[in-house]
Length: 130
Image (cartoon, rainbow, N blue to C red; front, top):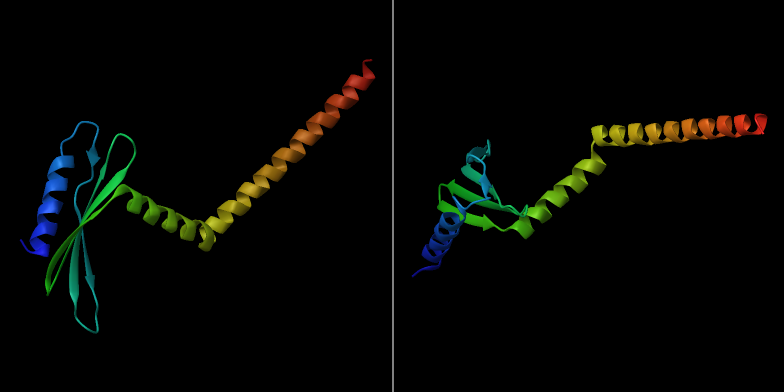
């Protein structure tokens, strides 16, 4: 059995084993086409994600191009690493995320100021009535 046949049977075996299990949810397959305009290469990707009851995500990725096809199983630990890396880039590098963080800091500052005013008011009133 060749390496590509082994990879295909592993892909089919894992997909068949996880599909339909109780507590496992799945997305509809999504297809994305990537085209390089100058070179003219076109690649088609099919992505489907499964989530088990423990919160682990398994991603099944199929890629087809002029040279053939490839099918990959992205296990939960790798999917988690991809998600963490995307979040770290998104949270730190976009103007929207920086504005969100600024608004959050401003809300926290105002909350602290209001708490300090309430405390000072309570302290004044306690002294008056003693």
